[in-house]
Image (cartoon, rainbow, N blue to C red; front, side, top):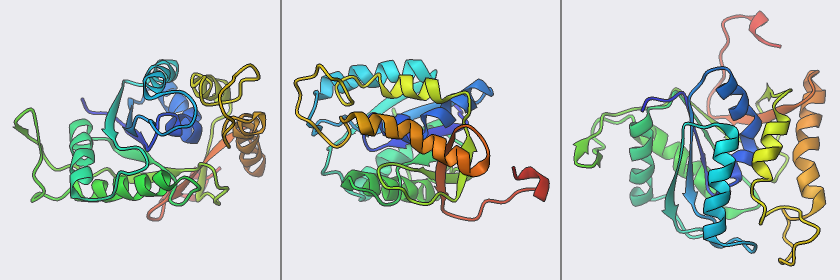
Length: 238
């Protein structure tokens, strides 16, 4: 399946939190989008790997993505080595995305930075003819995405550009709150975590609102780039 955008996250819910509204907007514009989670989030304090599996499936359906897969790397302990790179390369070559969205470059959770570099390196290596991969005994052709963009997560890293997602925040929040075990629930008896507070849930929306304020729209999501973003002319910029 050839798709337009492949969004990867170290954990189920990373993609929804980082770029859920952008994904919803691109799908509404007719783009094909897929999600790949690197781990099942099995080390998460709240819930289980099984509940995260179900929640991630529900979130994917809410966003309307073409597919969602999980590579089942070891949560907290996967590394950026050849073994893990090859598995990501297989997915890149399988779906041939024009754009890859992945974890933030630096963050509170160690898996976010590791996942960011792993995916970035795999995108480069995926374009090399002499890196050989197979799926179901079929040799894959090289493929390198045109762009790799890193969405924002816990830290307020200054974005290189923002996407106007006005009109799509409700869809994003619905997909985020599909992870019922992870986020704020006044009735939950689970231990409290940095992302289970009411403040965190509200911050997802007010961060997008603040980024929108800075560019004159209602809501926006921010991204960082690996190389300069080019436009055809000055009037392409909002």
